[in-house]
Amino acid sequence: MNTHLLKCMAGLFLCLLTISSVLASDNYKLESGNYKTVKVKAPFPMQPIKVFIYPNKDFSIIDYGAKSGGEADNTKAIAAAIDACNKAGGGRVVVPSGIWLTGPIHFKSNVNLYLEENAVVSFTDNPSDYLPAVMTSWEGLECYNYSPLLYAFECDNVAITGKGTLQPKMDTWKVWFKRPQPHLEALKELYTKASTDVPVIERQMAVGENHLRPHLIHFNRCKNVQLDGFRIRESPFWTIHLYMCDGGIVRNLDVKAHGHNNDGIDFEMSRNFLVEDCSFDQGDDAVVIKAGRNQDAWRLNTPCENIVIRNCQILKGHTLLGIGSEISGGIRNIYMHDCTSPNSVMRLFFVKTNHRRGGFIENIYMENVQAGTALRVLEIDTEVLYQWKDLVPTYEERITRIDGIHMDRVTCESADAVYELKGNAKLPVKNVTIENVKVGEVKKFVKRIDNVENVVEKNMTYNKKEE
Image (cartoon, rainbow, N blue to C red; front, top):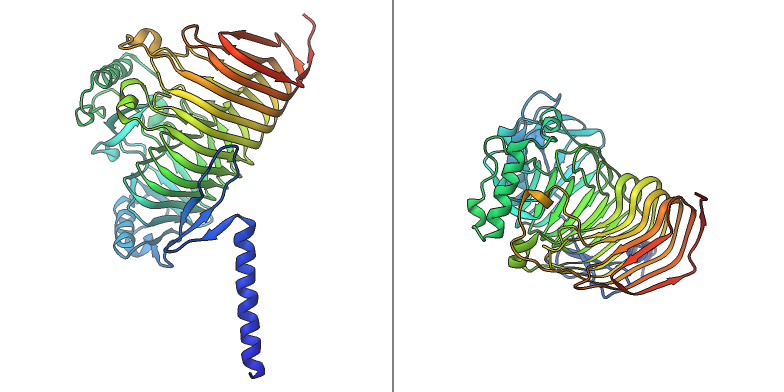
């Protein structure tokens, strides 16, 4: 064998060894077909997450007529690039550096919307741009509403990646943050239709002064989702909403949205997801797990399950990890660990439901979290109704089964209380474990427990502020 051939073989071996090492370090495994898999550790069985390998094809929006500068409407150009990418078998739809004004972006399968560094996708705030209405949901109730700004429905393999920014114009949406009487009447109408099994196609909410704001990102009934590397600056409503989706990774995001209902990321009736290395700076809850509302979710019968959140930073938000209050399809196997909340949140870990929800909450874990200040380190509240308390009646009472809430290795500089557990007397909460929790200063009370069976408290330390 000649020397040149030996050198080539050695180089090939070294290259394969390097690729193998990288894959192993991230728990990646190559799979047959166009996927690799990621193994994720959790205190419950968690099947490997499939990650689609996008074809090496680029479709620049410039080639389809897009113009930068923030003045020209690029909705049609972006749609044409997505359509071409999909028809070619998939790849990247590339948004170059610059400011690109657009209306809604609708995905198709096998499309990765790639935002180059210094690319800013600027979304219009003219509601008519987001018509015709599409099938979406509003706070756990399915309906037809204004299109989300980035929308995918029944797609396989959809992604948003790159170091660019999603930045909607907010003037109109800020006006819609308010909840005047016409808006409340619209909520009553939607709630009544969902509670009485009116078909979703007949729940047309993008009319008149209903003003149900659209999501920023809403992926609905999709498989193999990837969100990686980009920034978000503001949102009309929930920021990232993954609804009835199966499998995906959310990583390296920088999310900042301080408007009304600006949750960071909401998983609703979704399964098999990893969230890691993200920063959330929110006007509402940061990481939220949901499973639909009342009759609508009982009809869909789809739990939210097998979700791991790790190595994330929550700079601001109402809640670090929120479970509910839309939980009627059931929530199980949620694991948050190695996250930080250095400033102030209302609650680190909040489990919330009410007597209309039904469903179940089980096997929820929070471990190794460091926090600044909070009102509650852990709270369970089984009667959270917000504005719905007097707005609409109870069509059917169903009590939520809650079993297996676990908190371990959590430190908090100060809190009004360490934990407050408010179960339902008709079906008490069961098996709450609070271990290795340290609070620097407790300002009001240490703990309160009502209608909870088997609270296990180990190694909880705190300094109680004198009244």
